Amino acid sequence: MPKLLLAMLLTPTAILQQTSSGHVNDTECSFDPILNSCSGGMSSPYLSQAPPSPPESPSEATVEVYALSAGHFSLPERFFVHPASQTARRTVPSLSFLIVHRDQESGQTTRIVFDLGLRRDLSRYSPPIQKHVETRQPMTTLPDVTASLAAGGLTADDIQYVIYSHVHWDHVGEPRDFAKSTFVIGSGANALLQGHGSLRGSHSFFESDLLPAERTIELSNPYEDIEEEAKKQPLHSGGPDFIQEWKAHGNLPRVLDIFHDGSLLIVDAPGHLPGHINLLARTSPSSSVYLAGDACHDRRIMRNERQIGEWLDDHGHICCIHADKKLAEQTIERIQQLELSGVEVIFAHDFEWEEDPANRSRFFGSS
Image 1 (cartoon, rainbow, N blue to C red):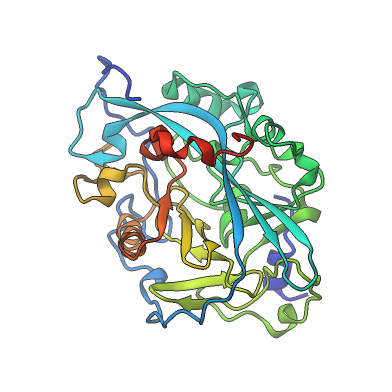
Image 2: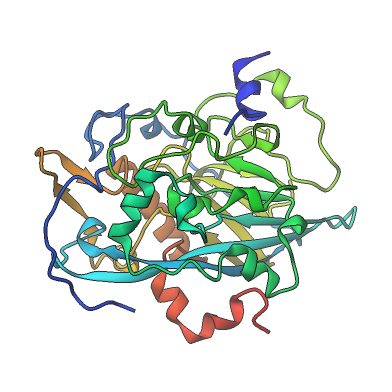
């Protein structure tokens, strides 16, 4: 069977008071084995991108998007933005999202959860992640995704698909709760799960048994043509199509229109971690929401008030929370363009969005 097809059918997979601790070490350093650098200083295959094409004519198809609370934890600002105090910390959410699509022809309803947030039982993380969690206190893990779904009358069994923006510990949640769901991950994420990457930092430990092989799809490489045999996979009427060619859409070089109606696009969003993907959801004929995962961690970067943070670890390495800083900056620039065009942008750790009273009714089950 062709290698690509095997991959796609997968295979085991508030601000706080400032603290006195200002020691900088290498526990946050991300490392890209291709670039051999934390800051992405060398060339990368991601830099060769097709020019964007105009978006297709809009249809009437839309999706519903609801925020799901999935825990809160504390981040040291110096690892994420520059300039920043060495002691400043900030409490941030780990947001997940429920997306509901109703097919206009078949009437079929598809429910998707984007990211699963924090694991409610921290002892179920691997020992290296449990050690890392100690640096992220205070932390609350309830309500988690399942409790947030229950607030609106749903259970994990009602969710057909779980799409991960990426496989960092604060996004993967508890997959075993979703025993009937199919999991979707970006290209390169499975290699990380199976231990084939080389990422520095206490936050970059991954679980090889995280996902059930028989219910996991790894998306095709956005920078390679899909194999002809993969294109022939049977599709379910009204359901999502994850095995297709990536195409340009507006200023976004690589997207997948998974329902073939323009209502929900998976967006290639390189820079933070291999396999990092975002979603662009049309919620009305004239409005859309961009779910940006960890493309950015602080809106001050989006407003050009801060830059992406970098620091030196104990070994003199230049470190960055993004595996490839240059690619992350390019992704942020595209998101800024979307926001200027009127698209709403929400990040996974978007404390400003969560703290806005106008958004309280946007959480599932709030009304």
